[in-house]
Image (tube, rainbow, N blue to C red; front, side, top):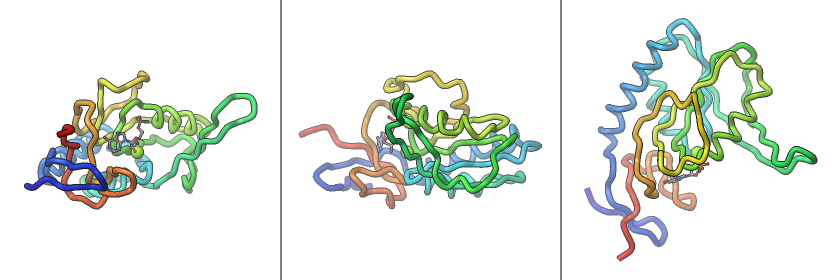
Amino acid sequence: MANIKVWDLEFEPFMTHNQIEERVKVLGEAINKDYYDKAPVFIGVLNGCFMFMADLMKEIQIPCEMTFVKLASYSGTAQGEVSQLLGVGIDLTGRHVIIVEDIVDTGNSLTHTMAALSSHHVASVAVCSLLLKPSCLAHDFDNLKYVGFEIAPEFVVGYGLDYNGQGRNLRHIYKVCPNP
Ligand code: IMP
Ligand code: MG
């Protein structure tokens, strides 16, 4: 597989679509087992999750629902930043929720997603992220239950992940080449 260029940066092959598929299968099997009687609601956080979500859902064989959201954050009056999930479209009261993310880096955006979910009175929340950069994590999560791959703190694109808007369409995942 060849290197690719996205904008000004060169990227080298990191994970093939096949490797990703194999791992997504395992994640799906684990969720099928853990949630067989829970009719979970999968919530994909756009945009990055779209390809992972599509492949993951094909592995889910239990009753379930799914939706996609966008995370909106704005400056609140007294409490500082306020986060809101746009487009939920399902009453989440008493539901078992699985948040689907492309990547958790510092965990800042996941923290906002969790805060926004807290007003929805769900029964439980677990997180399923394709990628995790453990050394970048700045928050503790006790519900980061399903992780595809733990990676070093390198910048990656493809399979939904972008660099400045481009690269989401790539079927493999690439990592940025070191500066020449
Ligand atoms: P956070 O630092 O965990 O809040 O990650 C925030 C967002 O940064 C993620 O949802 C991604 O959209 C983006 N991001 C983090 N690391 C990468 C990467 O290596 N490639 C592409 N996007 C990334
Ligand atoms: Mg994301």
